[in-house]
Image 1 (tube, rainbow, N blue to C red):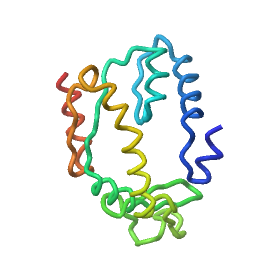
Image 2 (image 1 turned 135 degrees about the vertical axis):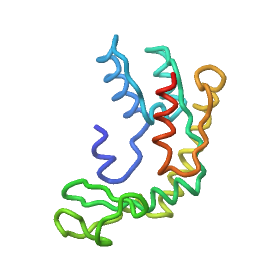
Image 3 (image 1 turned 90 degrees about the vertical axis):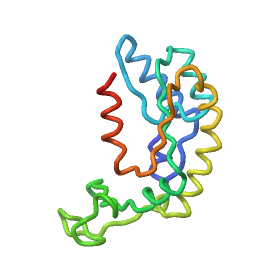
Length: 161
């Protein structure tokens, strides 16, 4: 269902993602799970609230320029799906896959202009979701200035609970 949109580098429509996620979460009733990147819209959040009680929301506050820079430095090897980032996971030879020696490509939606447009669109649709959960399940927003160092900080937070 979503594959046709993803293959064309389009955003998957809200109703498609919501239906897929609700189906998957219904199959996981009684289990513990963690969602990353869902819900992204108010409609998705409202659908989620109808089937479960959200325990915790973690809001990562990453500056626009930091995200744009990181995402626009992503290159891939399409046949294998290997992903490189020129800052923290660069190929040994610029533009060449480490394993096959074949050329790497930058997808159209990873180019700086496309990333900036995607981030602006995301900000517009995510703001109502953040407002919905603010004060109830968002315990403390994280401000991350350097995304390459965020994982260790998150591990420390979760280990301390």
